[in-house]
Image (cartoon, one colour):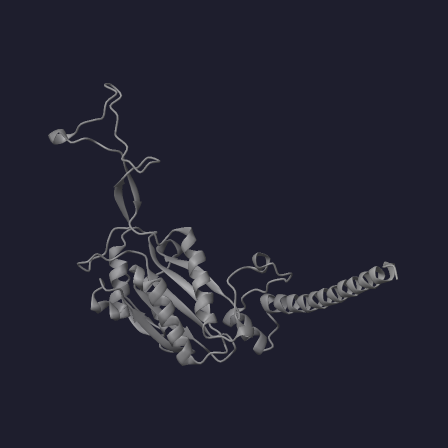
Length: 300
């Protein structure tokens, strides 16, 4: 049965991560990391069945090479704790074929990320262990029309509640300050160059992933990005198991805590569904009894 899983993470130097190494690991390739003068070789990594790079129209075509793309990202970021990339990890419906997974991901990534100006480097992982999934690495800087990286932040006029610029008032005169060449001075603020970090984006990405999957799934297989509580369902959620949890289980080396937890949750949910069905039957019986009593009370 298809399950819903979408997690958003950041790849940053502050966590001791490298964009080049992260891409090499997820794609199973051998890439040279210029910043650290190291070769990251993950060509022996198993289970990587497909990789692709998608670019916005502003990006140089050289970025179709992931080594070039992520070295360019590393070069553009100077701080020791810089955010290098955003990663979206999704579980893929087991009911779909590899070709369907490819089309599903390509279209979803194009619509939600690349069309907004992000470069996307993604790979499908599937070890035939019942856990097909994909890693989507996304750039966090916009690209200017000339192909260069834009700054993460830009200066903009501060606006009041009516959308008007706010003048800088000289406390000595009580009037608006005047700068060089008699130019009026206005309050300014530093804002993000793009809106990719806005919180509502994550909810939109999650919702659109469910929509994209459901276009290919049958009515009885559809997934929902909302929690059971938001759906109004009385059911306990399981935790995403991932590859390592399933590996421990398959080797019988002792079930991982997550696998063990999920088994208990499924047992509780089955019992809960049984109780709900019994409660529905009891309600139906009560309704029928009430109807019979009402009929008996009617005068003949």
